Amino acid sequence: MSTSWKTAQCGCWSSAFWVKPVHHLASSSYAISLKDEMLENWIHNMATGESPHAFENPFPDYNGEKLLGEDRKLASSIADRLKESVGRLLKHLHTGLSHDANPKRPDFSVYTGTSGYAYLYLHLHRCLGVLDSKENEQYLGQALEHLREPLANPQGRRHTFLCGDAGPLALGAYIFSKMGDERSSTQCIANHLGMDKVDREVIVKVTRAILDSGQAMGSQARDNPPLMYEWHEKKYLGGAHGLAGIYYTLLLVKDSEVWPEIEKLVRPCIDYMLTLQFASGNFPSSIGSSSGDKLVQWCHGAPGWVCMFVAAYKTYNDKRYLEAAERCCDVAWKRGLLKKGYGLCHGAAGNAYAFLTMFRLTQNQKYLYRACKFAEWCCDYGKHQCRTPDRPFSLFEGMAGTIYFLVDMLDPLNAKFPAFEF
Ligand SMILES: [Zn+2]
Image (cartoon, rainbow, N blue to C red):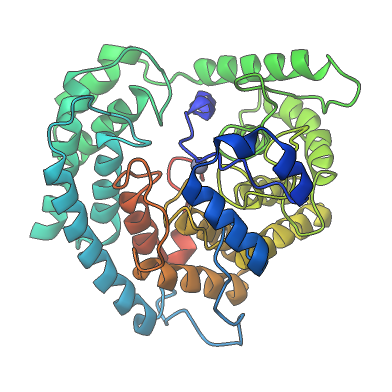
């Protein structure tokens, strides 16, 4: 288990100037440092009542149309448009990456670097290619091509899947094995982990360390839930590096040696999380956050909480968790078409995975419909005057992640947020 990837640097824009009461902002020191463009946007938003973070959702809600075909995949009338967009965006991605072939500071991570492209091509291989077809092999070959440098230049700094060497090594082990090169596959594992691969005892040890650390911090204040964590001295709450992501990951560890303890400790934590939900259905990004009901994105805000509530509902069979997840999806539907773009971490594609998670659980086509509409929005990539992400082609911030999502939409009952959902 690699819960430590929660320490991933999230490249979300802070855009911390959105404070609802105008007089707070006007008197705050934030205002002094605002760029002119941001200030103009803010004045416009205040005048029009628009959210500075999201576009108004232009789509009507679900009206009962049938969205799945006989084969339980997305109906071809919708799927064809998505496939056309995937082809078009892949061409843009190729062009973009070829212009950025030799960056001064190479980024090998899954999160925003080369290994993320390998992850995307592996996904294309699994979802789009027909077995033994030429296309299928090409995707796998392209995945391996993007891994060559990360595998040849291990960074040795971080252990995490998203930002460290574990990402390219795990992908390498899998891809080499798929290509029938067991020797190289084994090397990816053996050179770094030892031949016992990921021993069950290691998983138990890591889980225990997470529980011990959470309990130590949890016991420091009476208001804390039993398991508490900090990152950069802040008690973050969201899916990317906060409590929602950590509790969700713990609920995935079903090892009998630690499961009874997890089951007992996590439930009061989820109950604590319930108390933090705003009337809108959203959640704050951190405990004590002064910015309030602001961000609606996977890394910070309601969309990143859905996996946790769904896992908790499955574990404890408590309807309150399901209802909380429904409210998360409602706010994601209203405020989830983000001005930050179409990406996974803080964009429309990532928010749409909240709907897909709920669709897999409930089979309620309303959620599939909402995901389809967000996919439709993503098909018009670049046409909404969103901001350009720092890493515009990357898996978690940019175009690679949007393509990943559009491909996942073709088989919505098997769609899962990459590197997070299991
Ligand atoms: Zn983010």
